[in-house]
Length: 255
Ligand code: PEP
Image (cartoon, rainbow, N blue to C red):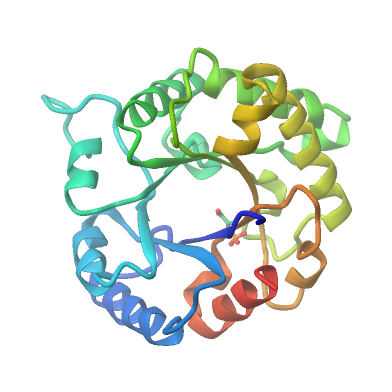
């Protein structure tokens, strides 16, 4: 049986706590009876425990947009893995390009976060990689993707049923309204899969890894991404802020 598609809503810092609660409740209502894919909502850190309460029946999952690699101590402003687990968080986005750009998150930090999350076996990291427009134009895309995978995942041991989601997010496509062409996404996902096969072996990759796409997906363009061989799901930003749009995206990709 094919794996269920994973669709992650990244709400970024777009909503207040009150707005988050309202939208989460709308999601619960809209997704009543939905069982074709795995849907997770990633609100701000401050909203996580409220969202956990709203999603308590477990049909929709939720995740954090970031976490720290140490579990406790003098790390002002950070959030630990164990506190995410305490409230039932199942996903955590790591190394998003916005954090790389605005918070100066570098390869070493992302690697430390991946290592720490993997150890728990209970939280699924969503590791974001993707090329800039310049890297794409100068034909360095494949190299950049492989390099980012190596930087994030080298030395990682994948145990048992631990899942790792790789989100291919071309930086130039995020929040711009222009998604990548589906055939190009398929090509990039193939490159990612081959690089993962080199690192972990085909069996582990097929059992434990999923590759999803993110970057300006909306109800109009999602159709082209539905039947791609190496497309295990989507990370959705802007279109996840409107429950009807997001629902259409999810329904289409899980067809
Ligand atoms: C993202 O930032 O993860 C993302 C996919 O955003 P958008 O869908 O708005 O491009």
